[in-house]
Image (cartoon, rainbow, N blue to C red; front, top):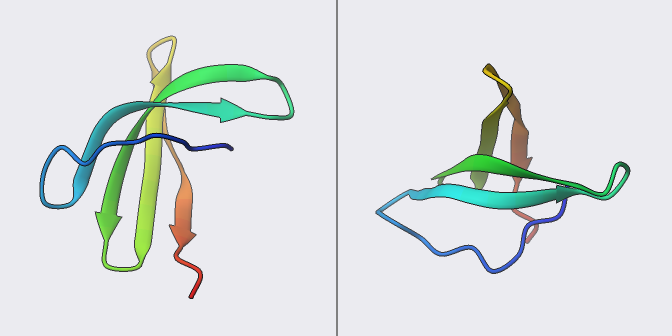
Amino acid sequence: MILEKHRRHGDRTYGKERIINPETRRNYTARLTLHGGLLDIGGCVMMICRNAGTWQRVK
């Protein structure tokens, strides 16, 4: 997934942002939440919601 130009909406949340899946070239709306060095990514497609994973910040 590709994330770019995301703006923080609160202390740890980025709200609903657009992400791109480079394999399918599709755009999705995602919920991004920062927990220290971890970024939780989740969202819904056609009423099916799921967690897309947790990414760790690279030092």
